[in-house]
Amino acid sequence: MRPVAVRSVYLVYDEPSGGGGGSGGGGGGGDAEPAVIGRALVNALVIVGVICVATFGLVMCYKYRCISCMIGYLMFAMTMLLTYSGGFVVYNAIVVSTAMQMIPVARLPRFDNARPDTRTHDQMAFAL
Image (tube, rainbow, N blue to C red; front, side, top):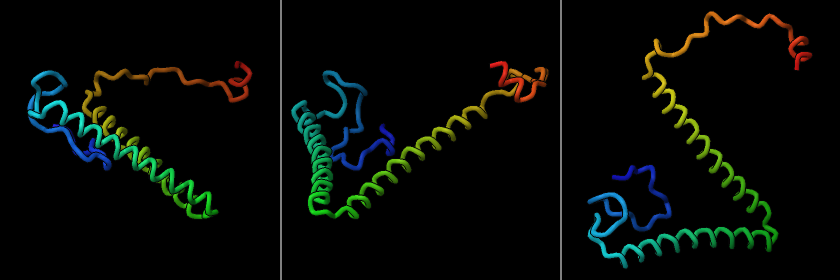
């Protein structure tokens, strides 16, 4: 079963959730291969269509000197991309920190007896 977070907004047809995993003969959903190819083609055409409409909109904004609309669209797209990327980083940080809490602390190396560096900042810069 696929998680809900993996689905795309532009996905028209989804894979059937039954049966085996992987592609091969006689697999999971009972669909014939032409039907699967047709669904994949529709999905690809929808994604290409969305990209073409967005590109056409940007070109029309530039042609008719509607720069404020174009800047607004680009700022919106940039904000959405950065928000999505930032959310992905935060989500992975939470997953990693949760996994790190499961590691027994007794097995982690300890650095308590390490000698502190007593050099000044100038001495460290001169050593480089």
